[in-house]
Image 1 (tube, rainbow, N blue to C red):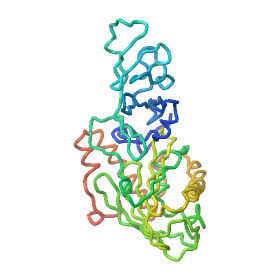
Image 2 (spheres, helix red, strand yellow; image 1 turned 180 degrees about the horizontal axis):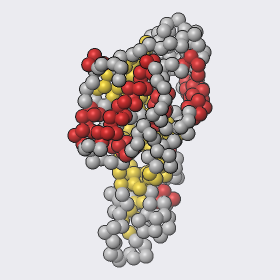
Image 3 (tube, rainbow, N blue to C red; image 1 turned 60 degrees about the vertical axis):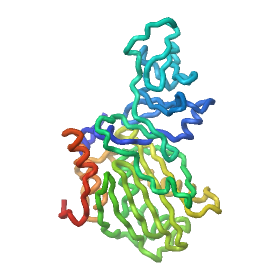
Image 4 (tube, rainbow, N blue to C red; image 1 turned 90 degrees about the vertical axis):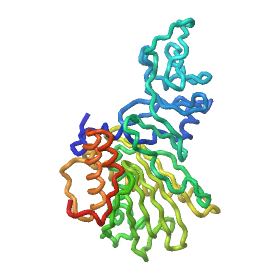
Length: 352
């Protein structure tokens, strides 16, 4: 497998929470609605299931003869292996061996489990909790009653999660990839936005040029970004045409170095019209982006790309990733400082 010359050791990403599936995917994975469901995160094969009322994520491997537990089934409050019927509780410990009903059960008969939580209709997993200084990304509309929240179907891109993040925050591509969809093709020069680091997030605001003639479903207005590292984007917007607000939440799951599973949630202030035109419009925008992003070679981010001043968002993002990678090797305190230390635009000296 090729390695990323910019991020030489992606192990630091194991300290973060990542979405691995939606609740809908889990519920549809079996007639019981409890799973199990096979997922993949950072090249690790995992199984997600609801055991005893709790959603759990474990390594997708039975310690007996290495069969995939995701091919098994939920029996009572346990997950049963499809090969020999060994059963595992929510804590990963083996509770029953059919061939040896009276025991003893070997102490090593335990499946590794990981931090797992449901939030925003998505199931989040953290592979390494040893630093315990990361949080599930921020979605500002989650508990706001004025919004109607829609979770779109997840979609896969043959590209890294880093590339997907950069695509969603890239202002310079609108005029060329989304002409008349998101942006006027005559407005190709984006503004340089101030960027602050606050509690593991990038904060910046982009004010769309007024008077552009684009699709009526496009949000032309003022955009406020809160980007939770490493791959989540909370985009609040005020639409100039009707003074309505909306929130877009985009997060990429790093399935592998060259594949991302993407989740998109949008919250609308208007509740009286159909969701489908908005879903179709979002799908159209993603379809315009996908072939371009998948054509980038390599699919990971190399260290020899040429950047200019209008690439400020991506260059600052890459800089922070490098700092997090280096800090993770130094220990929890260094990683926490690199992630959650407050760095304001006014304190920076450019170029960097």
